[in-house]
Image (tube, rainbow, N blue to C red; front, side):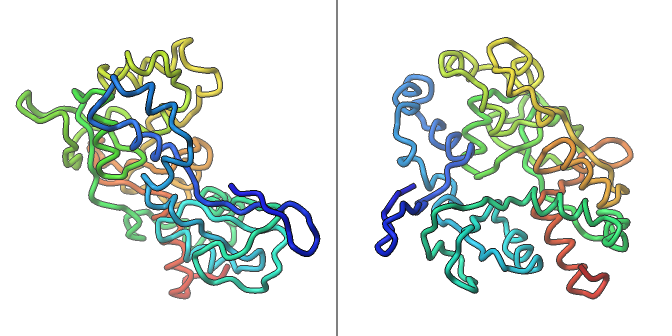
Length: 295
């Protein structure tokens, strides 16, 4: 953020230059020097890691008067959050760039829009009552870690593929390369490894945890005193739905569990795909545009 003085009023105005996410942090610490260079990497200025995740390079903004449908269009394309200037002097902004500075901004995230759908569930019943399969809301390709992968392998894989989270699936054979992501379809899901899992990790102990099994890390480490109490969140819980689940049920899961994706399993609890916040927003928008219901 850059603070500058307004030429006319002299008041301080904020100009944001980028967004840093946990995926940026994961990508930053995932280099080949591993544990040995961790101290140096964690001492780097925050501005130096902007852009590891492509979304952080461009700040997207929406005018306060932007319609919900236009908000949905932007957030259905994989953009996770946008800035809304609270004292905008421009009537209409349609471009992606943050073209004006303001004294204050609000952040509109995908989860805010999903919560709005939940609040309007009675009006959207004609859409939300359909199954995720019927609505084609399921993303069928799912890259996963095996249950033998280590934390440092998980970090490198997520950095390479720019994934905020991956499922941990049952390893199939001993010969499988556990340092690489695998096709998770039709495997049993055991857990989820997310970039957010590292939020409460103290630097002094992160080095010793990198060689640990990723599944053990997810299941055991967050429950230890080494993690701050604030990180004991529902996000570490394995959240799944079935191919027969309705979109309303999935929305209830993501809003109550505060997760950004739900793994989809079949009747045998084998992984079939995932439904992300992006998928939910795109599905509802597509249904509205097709005339299924008005918002």
